[in-house]
Image (cartoon, rainbow over all chains, first blue to last red; front, top):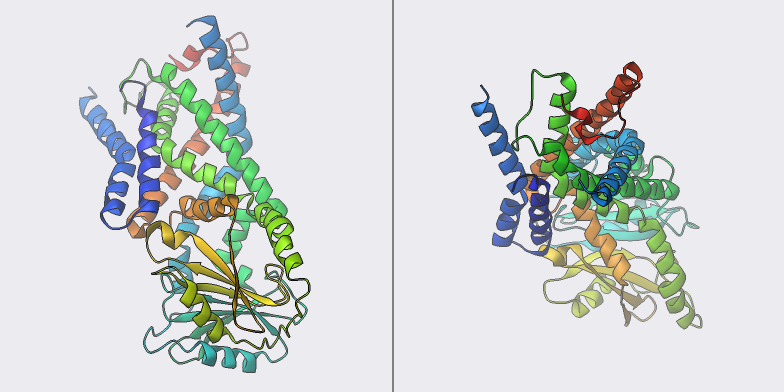
Length: 53
Length: 386
């Protein structure tokens, strides 16, 4: 994953398009996929803060 | 770094710098107005711009139209709108001076479908708070030309994002994802923030800027459709006698009935445009039909109904570029997934606002540093390293 994090944006694109095409569970799944870059970024940022000397 | 990779990198570095710089001010405005426009429906409801219907009782379109004609006897009706998904129980009536053929100088009126009462009247829709924001966001107060300006900004942002993707890796190769190097100068911390936040919002930003780029051509696309497909339809019906556009023989409730009979299962009438408009013929109503779920709620079927006989004249096959416009709108405004999606849109919008401002700061700080140390290499990747 190192240095390839921006490519996670493809998940956002896929999730948002899935939400547009579907309803119900597809909507929920699409949203979950779309927020992966944000969630992963938040997790990485917290981890980095904890590891800071 | 091999020479060819280096050239590719430098090209993208320059592209990222200059496209971003050109787009900075407009993008700041777009992010600020866009954040408010995500909640346009909620703001309009809170300000009473679009009144709320009772949503009970049978729809009384005929009563609503009778009220409309009594209220504005000197005007003509241009169109009727029904939006059961976002504004249940409300009918929109659009009126204008008798010689108007477009919505440019139209008055919007709202009716309670259950009672036929007029519950709202807006003689200048663009003057509402969100109307002003929208005109700034979509047209820069320049009308249709402003939309093309918006498309150009969208293109600059797409180029900036894609070039940013190319130049990202060399900048972050020495640090773990999420690390912000504080305590080693403001520039380094801001650069880390720019790369980190940029990576987080990249996918969203590509979707919004690409859809914004497409939407910038919406007026052009509609014009092309009018000059090609609609012109052909008009030519076909050139011999048909026009109807009195103020009082067509076939009424709107009859039109709704005919259109519903021909609609796909689950689809309903969304918009009815009167004969004699820019988007209709002098003889026919145009009816836009929409679905209620998923993609169908975002796509449109169009039919033309003879205002003299009440017969379905034709199904209008809309071209792919118009369907692309219809799909670009929700992908740009994020209004198709309820509050969770609006919150995601807001968060990404604010993060984009941040990297736009911080990117500009990085650019000008670098210029300042170069002025102080003119011998420094201008385009080194390690430029930002301590």
